[in-house]
Image (cartoon, rainbow, N blue to C red; front, side, top):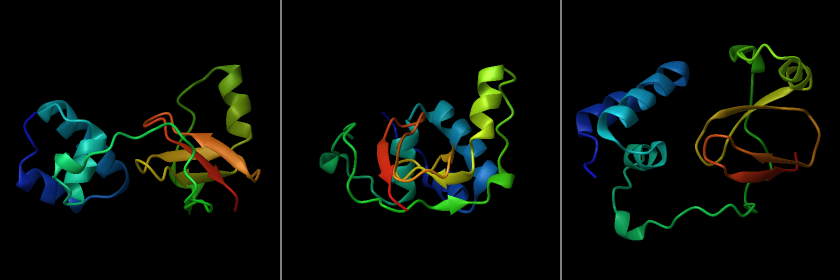
Length: 126
């Protein structure tokens, strides 16, 4: 597996939000790398000898959610009645501690969340 060129990584580091998400999608397809590997390269961790695969165990570290303004995200892409019911319970938007994807969740605490992108399971107490 070939790495992503440094010029692509440096441009990606300057982006945020939706622009970053689009560029990550393009780069992962173009260079055949996973999003997790791309994020490791963005953080400067290119040493794969220290790579430890993620487990599906619930991490004990994150206890508070990185709460975002949910009005910046759109959840209306699924027109089904079930999706409408799920959207009505969304009170907050948080970032997945594993991959940084925005997740819409209710304001119930504690809450166990499984990220649909990286399948990391996290429990938030506050």
